[in-house]
Length: 266
Image (cartoon, rainbow, N blue to C red; front, side, top):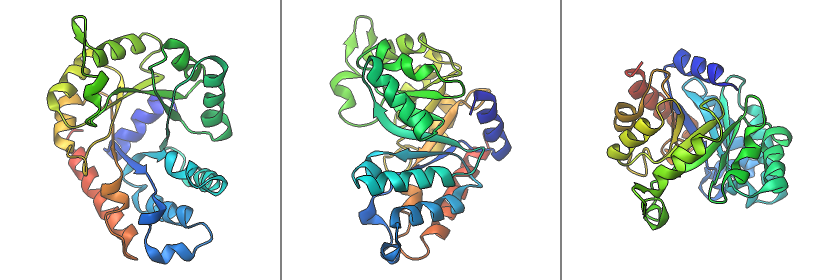
């Protein structure tokens, strides 16, 4: 999916909602465990319940890889069930160099045809550039995260700027706003403002809304641009909002609630 298609989908739905399919098999409603593929049965119901409000789905590959071969099968079935016109993210946080990085790119762009994959930039340009060689595909690079450990490296001073600021400026020069997004945590408005000044045109994938303490209003007021420029990810707050047989109905309600909060910024 290219940038124009993504922007069109966002403005059509008046939404920047990304639903995170961080499907922990231990949290799936118990009645689904009798299904042949409980993870896919859960994801299918969530997708059907939220597809009218979501412009993206983020599949956290760790929850599927941990299940071995059957987890990869569940992930592929989930990816194939996401309707056309909705942006797909492999949240795999890959980061290596040379032909290894090329193979990771082929994995998530060809074998499993996601629109994008999250990438760790610590090893530098030759760990990111292989992901930028595919038309209509995106590298979503870790920029500033909202976890406590971000202080260990990202927030450290590096000359006259913070390390995360140097990363954002450097990585953005390796590609364009047409093929690079950045992961930016949602919990501090000052940092959202700083990032938007540094990256006025790039899309930002923003986790941390909901269970982690961020909120839609803060993110949109401080980082929305003329093409929206945001994908706000919500995982637990939607997919695990209810553990009963009514889980899909509740997911629908929560997704709709988030979309209504976003709508006012269009």
